[in-house]
Length: 112
Image (tube, rainbow, N blue to C red; front, side, top):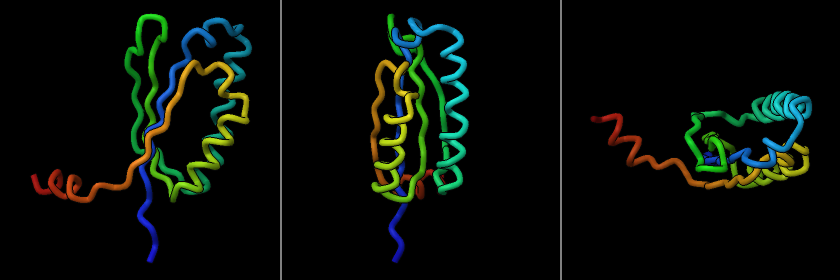
């Protein structure tokens, strides 16, 4: 029996490190997201939702991405690659929250 996929909330702020990074380097950083996301999309990771909201006085905006992943091993590889890619160099803070698919709530929503 196949395991249920997991849901992952990936939250990060650029904050002061981004503001202290030269504009040309920030553009290279932004371009760095594309191959990273392309690889994980091909591996079956799905982006379910994304949004941003004010993060605080000095933090700028906080970015939220919700992914569906195969399992914790895939999340571990995703997280490790993010940390080793150099993309984390201008991220002030980030966190990852993991959960499974909560079928009762999905069902209640669908029935309402």
